[in-house]
Structures are given as structure tokens and as C-alpha cells.
Amino acid sequence: MTQSPGAPRPYVTVVPHTVEHRWEQFYRYGPYAVLTLATLVSSVAAGLLMTRAEMYTAGALVASAYGLQLWWGRARLRTTPGAPAGAAYYGARTVLAFALTWLNPFFAIYAALGYFDVEPLLPRRVVRIGLLATAVTLAGSQSGGLPPASLMNWVAFGALYVLNVSLALFFWHVGMREEEKARIQVETIAELERTNLRLEEALAQNAALHAQLLVQAREAGVDDERRRLAAEIHDTLAQGLTGIIAQLQVVTSVTDRDPETARVHLERAAALARHSLGEARRSVRDLGPVALEHDELAGALEKTVAGWAEQHRVRADFTVTGTVEPVHDEIAATLLRIAGEALANAGRHSGATRVGVTLSFMDDELTLDVRDDGRGFDPAAAAPAGRTGGFGLGGMRARAERIAGAVEVESEPGGGTAVSARVPLVRHP
Image (cartoon, rainbow, N blue to C red; front, side, top):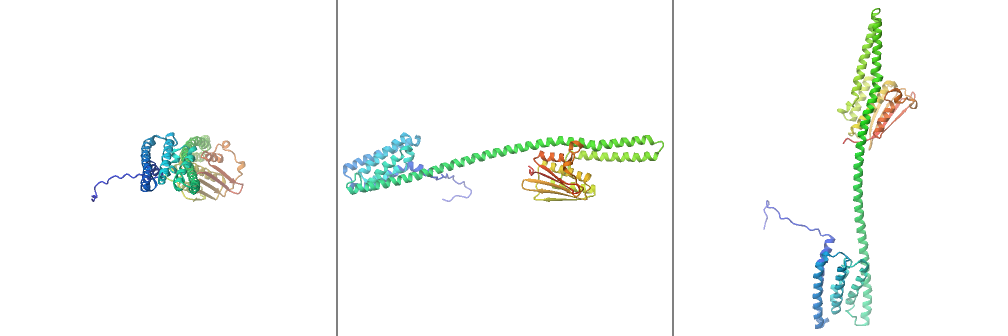
């Protein structure tokens, strides 16, 4: 019968044939099959080996064996390994197999079941006893039947019994070792899974801590910006206003008798006012890294360096090494601030003719280097930030330390200055 292409296909259930599944099938149906095989083979040879009375006795024992197996088929599902019910079943079956083998040696086929299910049926301390008892029946059958009829049969029985016992114990020990290896492997896998779970939890906690640190760094950066702006207002706007007031006071005192001098001072006051206005606008812009609104860190740094070079008319080169990656906003803002302060220091103090700025992307680190060929200074003698009211080297170090970075300064009088900032490479989420 063919099936049309559009017709639904019947569902097929596939049962995985694992080792445990096969053993379960054997424990459930194997004894019936083995007992039936042993009965058939013994029936063929019954006329040569058994009397009529022995045949009737064997028939009754076979019926008892089937009845025992039917009882165990129902009891097995609610019996744990090594329980008394399992030991009773094993013992009764062993006795029946011994009696049947005594009547007909071919019933040893049924007795051989004792080698296969001894471990799940008997407690571990009596497994050897079960193997020794089963070996008696098998050796008796292999030596010509029970009881041995002659001295030669007894010698053969002894040798075969030793062989059966040795093989049974050897394979039992091998099975025990394999079971122990499997148990250790399962425990190892379970421990690895628990370790992976703990590692995932630790990584999640680290990510949360990292986010918290960035928030704290951002809050600390706000406070730092307030202090910086206060210092800049003091250093630029306040000084400019003071200068304007001084110039206007001179204008007031000389307007009547020296108009030319008054005009010169008025021009100076206007120039100071324009300069102070420019400083105010610059300070407002610096409240946030406006350059990062439209560019990544590398592009913002390049524009900052180019703008500084145009303003100070000094050659400034910008270089990027490594693979450029988008970095976290806090990291980018910190490096941009450090670069701006280093360039500002170079423009105000160094008298440099050439400046080089390098941004290096490494596996887990970002490095910013700002070098100039100016007059240099002694870093050990540099005034701390609090003493001058400015941002200074101490402020740059504080910025880097807030994001687990560091700033190093190398300089000497007449030897130029190199500022190097190293921070973690935290990629943009």
C-alpha cells in the first residue's frame, strides 16, 4: 500500500537499546527462555538418561520452576536489589536446578542462570556463596552427571569445579571493577556539572560587581568633575574677572586726562572678557566628553589631537595599534580625559615642538601614551593637585585608579615627558 505525499505519517516510537535496558529484558524474560530450552534438550535425551519415575519427578520440578518464575515476575518489580525476597528466589531456583541436573545433566543449562543474576539478587556478602553453589551444579553436569559414578568422574568433577569457581570469581571481580569505574565516572561528571554551576554563579557575581564598580566610578567622576571645574573657574574665570576689574579701574581713573591710555585698558578688558568667555564655554563642554557622542574612542582621540595641534601650532601625531574594538563608555571617557589633560599640560608647560599620542589595543588591556619633546620636569618635585588647585598628574592617576588602571609619568629636565595610562579593556556591552 502506497502513501500519498500529503498524508500524515504514522508516529513511530523508538526505544533506546541501552545496556541497562537489555539486562532488564533478560531478567524479565530470560529465565523462561532458558528453562524452556533446558526442558526441550533434556526431553530429547530423557529416554537415554532417565527412568519413567525420574521423568515424572522432573516434570513436577519443571512445573515448580515455572511457578517460581511467575511468582518472581510479580514480586521483582517491588523488590530492591539484595532484599530477602530476591535471595529466597535465588536459593529456591538453585535448589530446583540442582535437583533437575541430578535427574538429567542437560538441566545445567537452567542452572547457569545463577552466574548472571547473582549480584542483583543476593547481598554482596553472600555473592561468592551463590557462585560456589552454582559451580557445583555446572561442574557435576560437565563431569558426566550427579552424583559422579566413578573415581575418574570425581577427579573430573573436582577439576571442573575449580575451573568454574575460578572463572566465575574472576569475571565477577572484573565486573565489580568496571562498575566502580562507572560509578566514579558518574560522580566525576556530576562534580564537574556542580563546578560549572558554581563557576557560572561566580561569573554572574563578578559581572554584577563590575557593573557596581563602574557605577561607583561614574559617581566618583561626577565629584571629580565638580572639583576640576571649581579649580578651572578659580584658575581662569575668576582670574579673568579680576583682571577685567583691574583694567576698568584704571580706565575710570585716567579717562579724563589720558583718553589714549583709557582706550588701551578698555581693549585689554575686552580681550580678557573674550578669553574668559572662551574658558567658560570650554569648561561647559568638558562636563561630558562631547567627542564621544559621535565617535568611538579612537576617532575621538584623533580629533582631539588634531584640534590641539591646530590650536597650539605644534606637530602632533596620533597612532592606533592592535585591533580597534568598541570599549565601555566609562573607559573611553577616562582615557579621553587623561589624554586631554596630558595635552593641555604639554601646551601650557612643555614648550614642545612635537607630540605623539598612541592608543594600543591588547588582549585585555588598553594603553594610552602621550609623549612630547619639551623641556621636561622632575616628577618627584611636581606639586600635588591640591596645592595648585588644578587637575594635574595626581588627578590623572585618580581617574585611572577608579577603573582599576594606572598612570605612569617619565620625565626629566630637558628630556621631554611621557605619560602612559593602562586600563582594563572592558568591551562595550
